[in-house]
Amino acid sequence: MLRLVFTILFVTGCSYKPVIDSAGRSGTFPNSKAEEITNDEQHCRYVAKSNTTFLSNITYWIFDEDMQTKYQVIYRKCLIGRGHSVLN
Image 1 (tube, rainbow, N blue to C red):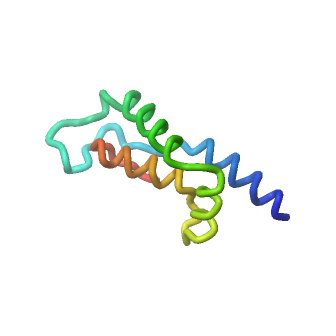
Image 2 (cartoon, rainbow, N blue to C red):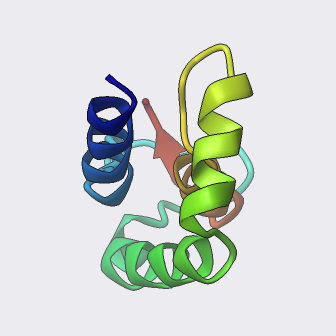
Image 3 (cartoon, helix red, strand yellow):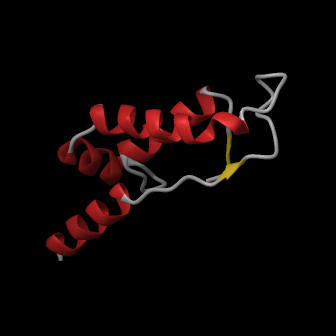
């Protein structure tokens, strides 16, 4: 059972793809940031990978009420901080 949980966590944590509203603005910036989405996704993916480990993802996932990994949270916050509207 525990092995199945770890497998699911590993697969879903590494395959996280945020849903971004590229037509809108987050309200922080006067102009749309959609033209920079590819660069921002690559940068945020790198930041999230660099600041998480398998153990930190498991620990975060166990105690998070939404069952998110630390990787997902960092990735999403990074995109929001760069002015994108993340829907999930």
